[in-house]
Amino acid sequence: MSDHHLQLDDDFWEFDDTPPAPAAATISQTVAPSQTFSRVPRPKGHPFRTEVDLGEIDERMRPSAPWTARTLELSRGHLVLLSRRMVYTGRKMLISVHLIDSKPTPLAGVVVSCDYDADGLYKIDLDLVPVPRDDTSLRWFAACWKK
Image (cartoon, rainbow, N blue to C red; front, side):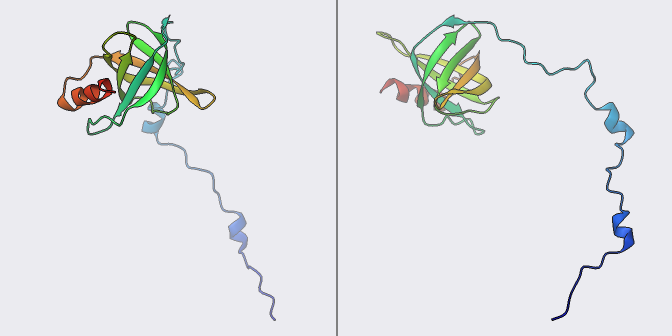
């Protein structure tokens, strides 16, 4: 049996693997120190505890099958809830709020944040937006209200 060893040139060890300096245009496009990305605290809403049905609107403006969540707080501009399902920031949602002795209330929102809370639940913060009036959304709400 012959002994095979990997033969490397001396030039191999002198190889410069440092990345090249960025181009001048790239440097000017980087984030300036005055542009900080800090999360501004959201205004505190009022405690609001009820069950809701949620549906995520996809790229084709079709709502997903509804799933159940529980609300935590509500204000004029946002809704915070707990859900077993995670949703991505920026996604549009349909919300059907079920109140005792009342017809469910349709809402819509855009996900501002979705963070793991505890016990397999995600805390979802939504900015409320006008409810879409297209046929697909209206059928989704009607299906939730028949339950």
